[in-house]
Amino acid sequence: PSTTESNMGSAAETNKDKAAAVVSAIASQSAALDEPLEVPGGTPLGQVCDAAAAVEFGAAKIQMIFADGADVPEDAAGSALEAFHMNVITFIAYCQSAMGTQGKTFDAGLKDAAKVLCKSAGRLVATATESAEPSGSLRAVLGECWDAVKDIKKLPKDGRVAISKALMRSATFIKDTSTELSELGEGAQDEGGNPEDPDEDDLRFHDEDFTAEEMRVARACAEFASASFEFVRKIVAPIVRGSASDIDALERALDSSKKFQVRLEDVGAGVYPPQDGGALIEDATKAMEEGRTMGKEIAEAGGVEGAEEAVAELEGAFNKLRDALGEK
Picture 1 (cartoon, rainbow, N blue to C red):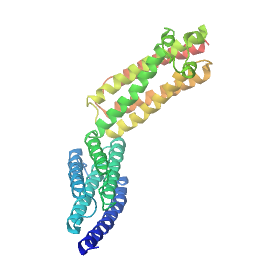
Picture 2: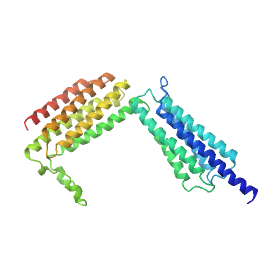
Picture 3: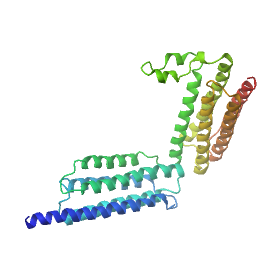
Picture 4: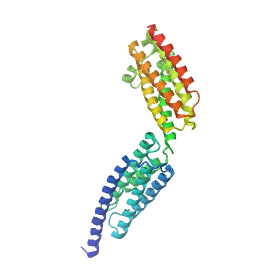
């Protein structure tokens, strides 16, 4: 082979080695995302998004330089790899400094999204330099990198917004349980099912599967589920509107909301035959306990009026359910 061909082959190997070092470094440095710096006041998410945009721009340059494979001049390749590595390091540093002051919900969302971007950045560098020939998957990997940046830009701007979104997700599950139970006794299940999948249809309960007593209990549980959704709606809406500000109290309220959701789903599952009245009242009691805790924490978060009244209304619905189950 000619000297030029030999040098080209040597350049590809050198560039691949440099790239491997960058990939390894990114993997190691992204571990810092597990250790927030807890900078006073924290870095605004907007700066994190700016750093992510720089990674996006750097990724495009990597794709352009190595579009025809790793056989490019070593100086140009080395400069591009070093610059891109610095983009990623800067992004990691901004993420670190943004975490630690906005609560665990915000931190978890940012950390997960940031790790996805770091992994896609590493894959981009590895794919771009894997061969002296053009990579057929380079543009697809670049697309993954860009998608990861988009996800960073969609993150909640602060801890309160992150918790609000999580509370809304929990409220949605509670609403689903309430809606499902409200349809019992109305023949709604008889209209459903999947005629093309008889096995799935066999798993569905119809109104005729309930005895009169079981349907009475199911209706009582449905009323409690409906009251539960109203309870969550009344105390979550002010938070979504930005009334509460104590992040620690809101985090505790979110934990209680998730537990409340699980207990209510247990009540929902327990209404189907064969019913166990003892288990139903136990699940409802635990749901009520979490509801009380949730109301207390939200009241402590500040800016939410009516939390105590909402808890009192839920207590009334719980007492009705307990009385109904006592009759079983």
